Image 1 (cartoon, rainbow, N blue to C red):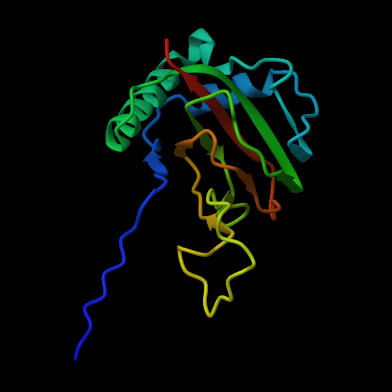
Image 2: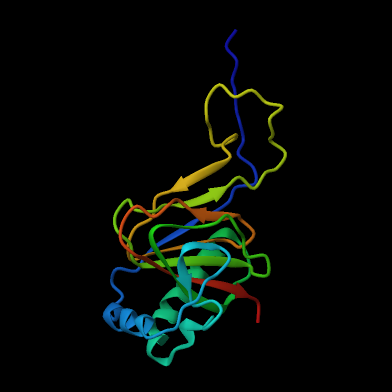
Length: 191
């Protein structure tokens, strides 16, 4: 007798990946970022952030087109996962220096969050997403890692790409193995 096995995937978490390589004003963006004051942030090890000094970086009038591009991606992401569209509520940028990393955290007061990487050396520092299901624990004996039992996933990221994900999903980074890495991050809320 042959058994027909069907395993259903439930409670999926969607990660949106958007290529922003065609953004025409990247040099202006980097110039604006270099003018900003950075400070330490509790989630950033060996790096700095504009979160405490300017957490509305995308409201800069010279970055209006970038904010519109990112908002368009947010709208697409929300439509594809079936939730009401949120609007960017705050935005900041972090710089990770060599050997820096972003600690495990989430964005609890937001709907969806995202990270855009205008400067990122290839294979230098992936995003890490942590398993949102706390019910799987050490009572199981694992024969192999599968999407059903992994504790975290190291998500390969690319320069000029934007990644959007549910704000409550815990995330961080690997240790930065190369030059300075720049990320623009944001949160969303309903108007």
